[in-house]
Image: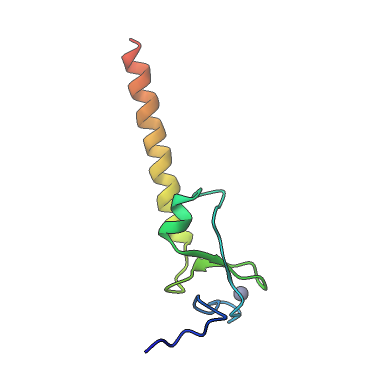
Length: 85
Ligand SMILES: [Zn+2]
């Protein structure tokens, strides 16, 4: 059975229970890839961003995702540094 009404393809906002959340295609922390990985949606009422499929918070993911890029950047910089001698 398909329980999700056509007007709200995403789970209601976990904070204010609004069903008007819209998909986020790009964000400052995750670009296009990070937002897709988290099914990121934004609530128009309380501005909360969360996983549109599970309703889970994406805060932890943002920290991990940004940490990943910081480490990757450091590794790339280190490689470039040592490659130049
Ligand atoms: Zn909300």
